[in-house]
Each structure stands twice: as structure tokens, then as C-alpha cells.
Image (cartoon, rainbow, N blue to C red; front, side, top):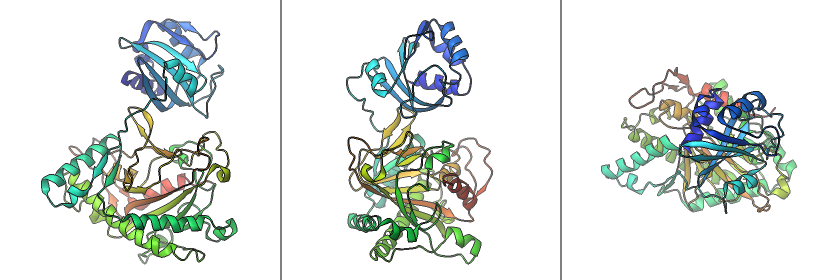
Length: 447
């Protein structure tokens, strides 16, 4: 499978040499339908690709699934070639056969089902999740050996996939359940009542359907995300009107649901405590002073989105390429997610297997690195792509609410990237946290 990945990466850069080396001399190309594109031999395949595919074999990998000696490849093409190779929900499928370390066949397929069948899969391939579950109980014990072991696991998770789940965090289940219940009361209000609290990305209040498309952050023009959100955040002013007007706005709680404010305020307090503790843990993972990160979070910016993913009967049939939340990375330091399991749920991008369903453990939080912390670490840690699938046809009544807490840093914190031996070699210039974050927020705003 690594052969396929390395060859694909090179093709995306316009480098055919690895493919030429990977193809067996008698390799064959089979198009979706019989026709002039079918050919045999390394030279003929390279010629067809160069002359006819017009970029149709380049694009972002979405999934790589091994099935015996074959690999199912799903990718979102950069260009729509003229050869009649269909797109399945914006995705193109191909099956690659590998024998003796060489590619012996490349077969275009019309859709995912056809590709899996051609590869010989008798059922949906199951990939073991690369997102670990980490118990924080030993970290809280005070035993230095136990704390070091937890920190090492966090470092490994952030280096490999940028995500992990935590148990033993001490946040009461009833607090999370209370926030979710009163948030549902808000989302159940008539649209005209919610409209009084309508804002756009970066505001405090109700984000209606159609105002946010997270895929924009990757440069992908997706339809708007299929969700509604109620958003709150840091509201302790600095005294600077320009700063406070964006980063420390007053939160706008709905008068129609008076129980929402006390529940959210209590939850935010616990989330900030937990986020700072996670940053202390991150510092330990790098063998740095315990306050290496938290000395820059004394008056941190942070927001929470309570996301409602309505059932299909309310949200409508998803458009091609539309998600509950489109593929993106988060922007800040750490994200703390409390989610409900579902068919249209969270997926995480992995180098080994493409998109994978994130594991779910009752009572656990899902934690991931944001762009700011990844840059701070000198790219030692990944800010990884993730998405929330659209409502699925087999679960049209699925109705989910997620609590997503985004922690950042002091608005005026100057972030300097770590260099080797902790970080990777990099020439990142220092960045001011607020400027770094605002650019990314602007990118996902529709309109």
C-alpha cells in the first residue's frame, strides 16, 4: 500500500518517474468501459496517461483500502478528464493490483461498490482505528513514572494521527447531558425565534444553515455544511475595543431557553480547566517546562460550537460533496469534542487507510491538535484533516448534537515554532495568535 501512496504523491507533483519504476513491463490499464484507452505495457500506459487523462489521475486521495493483493484507491480529481470516467459523489475509484512489488494492473471503476467487487471484497473492509484511547487517571495520580507514560502516549498520538480519545478526565456526565438537552430545546425553536440570535462565523449566537463551509479552508468549494450551531466563547474583555469586538464579544443567550446560559457557563469553565491541563500534558510530552504553553493562555481566546446535525427529513438530501462538516483542520491549540455516535459521524484522515471512522467510547472526549499548536511544535505534531459525514440513507432519522470546544491562546501571544531536536527543521516566522486564527476563520465563511 505504501508503494501506491508514494507513487500517487509523486504523480500529484507531476513526477512520473516513480510510476514508471513501479509499473511491471507487461502491466495493463483497463478503463471503466472497453475502448481505445485500454492498453498493455508500461510505455503504452504512460503514453495514455500523458496524452489523454488531462490530469484525471491527479487529485487528493480520499481513501486507500487494501484487499488481498489489490488496493482500492478513491480520489477527488483535480480535473475532469474527457474519457468518460464517471464521478461518484465527486470521487473517482480505481483498483490497483500489485504483485512482486510491481503494479500489474490499473482498473478504473464507476463507483465504490464496483471497485470493491472488482478487488474481490466480500464485505466492507474494516480498518483498525489508529486513534488511541488514553486514560488520564495515571496522569492525575501524581506518580512521575505513570505521568511520563501518559505523556509519551500523547506525543505518539499527536505525531502519528493528531487525534486521541481521553477517559478519566473527571468531567461529570450529567453536565454534558444537561448542555446537550437544553441546546436541543434551543434548536427546536421556530426559525423566526432563532433568527433573533443569527450571526455569521466568528459571532456569538445562532449560526443558521448555509453560513459555514469548512471545506473552504482546504481550498475546496463545497456546498455549505449541513448543520446549525449555537456558538459562545471567551467574554472577559481586555479593554481594547478593537480586540474585544471580535475575540471577547458578549455571549448572546436566548431568553426563550433560560436554562441554556447556566449550563453552558458551567461547561465552559470545566473545558478551560481541561484544555489547560492538556497543554501541561503536551509540555510534559516534549520534556519542557510545565507552563511552556499555558504561560500564553492567561487570557486565552476560545469558542464552543454546539452543533446540531438534523435528520435528513429536515436537512434535505445532501448535495454531491456536501457534509455535515466538510473536510478541514482545526485552527487553535487543542479541540475537545463531546459527540454522539452515528452513521453520519466523525471521520479522521489517516496516511495508512485514508478516511476512517473515529472510534467512539462512551464518556470519552475526542481530542485533536489545531493548526496553531502544530506550528508551535515545529510540525512535530499533526493538525489532521477530519470531517463529519452527511446524513446516511440507511439512517435518515439520525439526529445528533456535538459539543465542540476550541481552545486557542492569548490574542497577542507571539508563537515561535520549536526547532530540532523537538520540532522538525522549519523556517516558520513568529506569528501573532489572533492574526493567524482570523485568517482561517475568514476562509470558511460563506458569502
